[in-house]
Image (cartoon, rainbow, N blue to C red):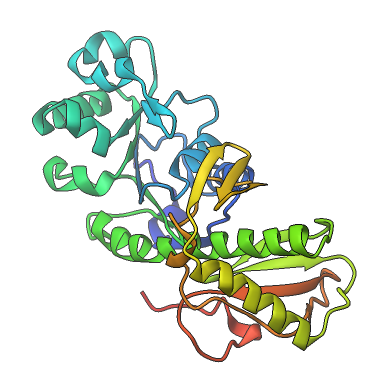
Length: 313
């Protein structure tokens, strides 16, 4: 009996905007697992650059999974488990592997043997940087998850898509997500520290930008937004370092501030390209919120009604 459902046979890919907060990433990971993951899926390929939020997404998709490595370091026992596959496989049903770390400690043929053995034994494998393994494994994942500016979910067949297709989309786009998050935090720093405004807004996501959503319309003019934009640009042009402090805080220059996604940033403010604010507060008739939009990346007139337009991959 074939294990795929009828609808899975026809799914090519699904796309989500990648949130920048760790908690929101885990919540989305949980939702992705409910919508797209089958209990019969054994080989899950994760694709994304360092600092893109892969660990948080995996923790949301697979609660309780012990990672072989995360942002705080590596687990030597998990890294070396592939040299004792029989013993290890008696104690666990799901394994995590990061190809970038794994290849620093073990040979590719050992990794391939471990993966094939685990699949034969009906174990599940979650493999980060699956694009590095695929050419040697000669077998695609049952589900591919790529994270950059967006999160792409693909369920390949023997006809593709190949992991490199996902790689070519998510890797180049990840920098915009990091730039947007850094620009958002700089804007927040200016508004709270220099303007003395309490942080009463919530944050949401948009392609190549960020959105600050207010319950009540902020009493600001286009001219005042121009001043705010100019001040944020001054900090960007100062090329201040942006560094991780802990899981709740970052440091921009000499200033510490709270951040929900402290690892999802560029390394210095000077890496933020073409920051600008939309010079009007945009009302959302459905939610009742009032939205302030900041953008990075390509210059040009912003079409607020189509910032999240479909892209042809």
